[in-house]
Length: 308
Image 1 (tube, rainbow, N blue to C red):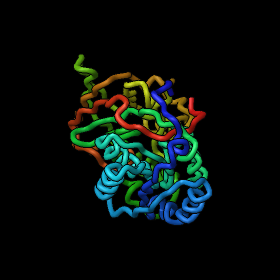
Image 2 (cartoon, helix red, strand yellow; image 1 turned 90 degrees about the vertical axis):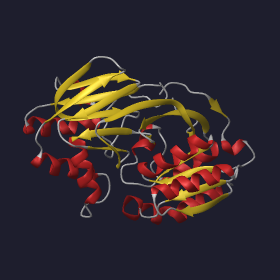
Image 3 (cartoon, rainbow, N blue to C red; image 1 turned 90 degrees about the horizontal axis):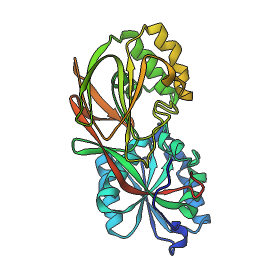
Image 4 (cartoon, rainbow, N blue to C red; image 1 turned 180 degrees about the vertical axis):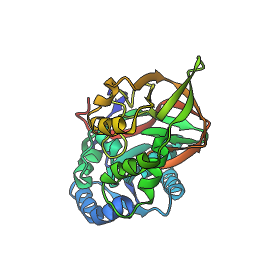
């Protein structure tokens, strides 16, 4: 991550009150189970706070906007979808975002070196620095991690619907289930108003951050502060080849494969030969065709003081 504009930690600014916006059912109930530990950690750190339970992502946006208007810092405690929703509201209100991982994947926290244990992550709220992060934009919505479509659309839908598997393994389960019935699609991808390219394959992922799917490093060079998006295109290959390549995604080594192409861009237009829903941060965000843009430095967030 490149160096962004930073200010002092919230703990050195007179202990601004925190509005902790929690989805207690995130991560199969993980956030709810960890809530008492988070409360205790915030009390030990001397951080004034209140807890708000969300009913939906739209409700989370409303709570975050109200918190900023009240002079509080909005802290998202849940999965990446909740964090993205709170980030959207905070960016519009020019507030400050805090992050406590409580979902299944916790990919944003992983990319930002925020501890994956939510009680440990409270120390970042007390001692971290405030820095600007980019957001992605699709239609009227924003995202903070990765927006993708094609094979990923099917895998995400399966992962979100299953109740059989908990934790980040649900994304690998979704991928394996999706692979069984997958047939290649043709995508038309236009980069920064330039020449369009037609590609037949699996996935087009537009990455603001490195990770998705519970630690899959699909875009190892993506940077949340560089004002650019990494477009990762996974082209057609035999299913057995795809299956063998899948484990390498957790190391980011898949980008060396000839079937994988990475392009950097500020704007990406994507259409496909059949209907697909685009998913971002684990939730549906748009239908294809879609235009994805980067909003450089759109949200201020509390990050670890030692973050690179």
